[in-house]
Image (cartoon, rainbow, N blue to C red):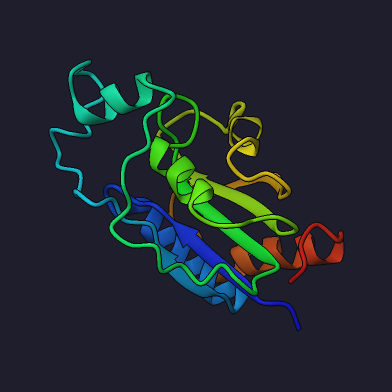
Length: 165
């Protein structure tokens, strides 16, 4: 039987709630991607071009350090990778995470939360950070997602051969 992981970055708790529901629905392990230095409300102020998140997102080469490198990626066939959409893509810490592990041969299914934008080119943007992985756009998990609706989504992926669940 394949092993599945739900890894997520959540700055405000919204993505964390979605990730926990997804992990339960998929029967998957759960791992929080944490920055070495937690984000403050001021850091997340996207209207301030000098805020930490604005500076990081404007420097495509920047990789925020992780708090740890203990994600149970090895042995997983499928990794659901979640994050809030920042500037129409994944936060730079998601690239740090992908570049810190070997995802070769794994299927990475993206899920995100967003205040208004979709995935845009996120899957394409992240492919260079996980060579050898299959990265697929998954689903926006905005609002109050029920375990039943998420389980139906996971089951549809399995039925269509989109994930090794």
